[in-house]
Amino acid sequence: MVREARLDEIVEHRRLILPQLSAPGVAAHKVKEACGFRVTFGPVRAADLPAFLAAGMKADDEMRKVTFDLRERAVLVPEELSFAWDRRMLLACAGILAASAVDRDGVSLRRGIRRGVPVTDAAWLALLAGGAATPLALPWLPGRAFSLKGAVTGGAFAAVATATLGRRLSPAAELALLAGVPALASYAAVNFTGATPVTSPSGVETEMRKALPPQGAAAAVAVGAWLVSRLGR
Image 1: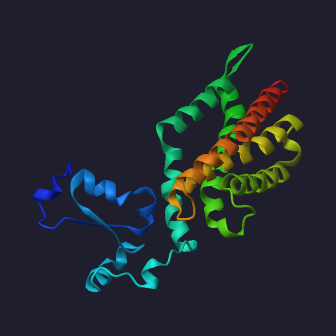
Image 2 (image 1 turned 60 degrees about the vertical axis):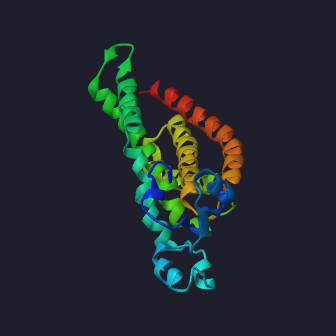
């Protein structure tokens, strides 16, 4: 990026100040070899840059301190949930409604809405659990794995939903809800790892390898239970 921006033609110095938390993913000596700029790892927060520069590029303990409090987590929630509005998610919801409308007697829009809307509602509930509630409650949820934290939150949301709906749910539909919401919430929570200062690339890769099989299995159970629940409607 330094070479592409032709930074050496814009500034006279040859020093880059990078955020402290970029250090695990940046090899300073390779940066210098590639573009001729020396790397200095600055403070955690950009707001501390003026004080850092005034101190001769010296960071004190407060500048080095990494925090991830409720406010900092809450700021990231809208960004993390923004993926739910992309074309893939909208197409998935449209596909659910379309599949719900089809039966042996043909296609019915009313049937598609009756069968499909509860499924899309469950999907949004899972995204809310994994993408919003999990980050906000992060320190108080059990385990270190984000996938586990998301599954716990999704399970709690699904349990409340099934208790609220009560007898309106068939046993198969209840199983679909209890399996599907935690699976999708777990997946959404894992996506939050890239926005936190408490994970590493290798740790995320390891967690993904461990989390994807149970997430996929739970999702398969949910889809199967949903298909069975359609037989009675």
